[in-house]
Image (cartoon, rainbow, N blue to C red; front, side, top):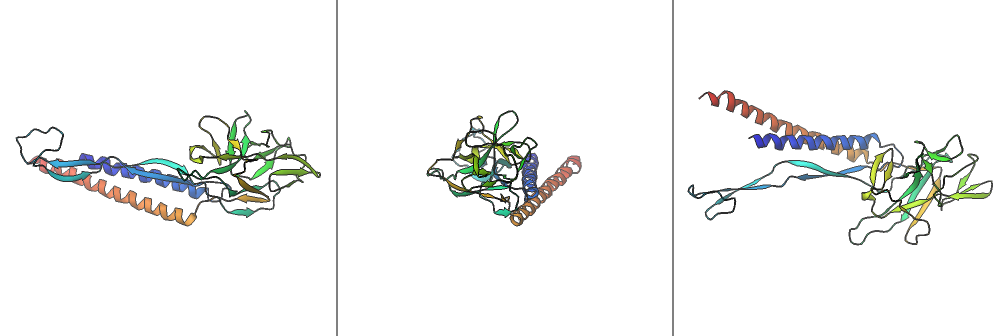
Length: 277
């Protein structure tokens, strides 16, 4: 019976974490470039119970002749991992010159794993550390650098910060920035062959586990993309589906809660009523 407490409690904890994940997705449904998290829930290893018909035979922990299989005993579930969904989001027209949307046209797919590669803007923090994002909701800071709203510098193909003297500039589809009829730089777009290996930091930012910079997609014949000025990539969160999953997780939490209450009542009777006999 005590094992049932742990099994029901593990189910409640799993559904609580699932609800937190889905709530975060719903809260970022309108965040440009946000990639929804997906969860993988697994069960703990099952135990095979077997009855020994001959009481004189010691229990050696192995299958014995004459034994009868009772069935499997599941010891609960847990949330194994969370993986972002890197599917392209819809493009939204904003009309702001500093808003830039990255649109995937063709990216390599790993033949063995079926994993689809993903493209990112290359940005840099004040300490010179590289980060990657799909959020093209950029701005121009007080010094004239093109930055994210969090203050990360957008880098060009030479991994240098982009200086824009005025907000009146145009962006070509290949990422070349034109100001006063002159090209002043080209946005660096990088390729992540295994985006699931990236570490999600929040605010739409990712980093590599080993700190190594991702390779640029510029000049890669297997990659095709397009940059659109005055647009942002919307979040790929499906609000209707996420709400349905939240209700499912909540109902599963309630079901485990009812099981826990039933075990509690049984234990109460075992201690306070049967124990008196």
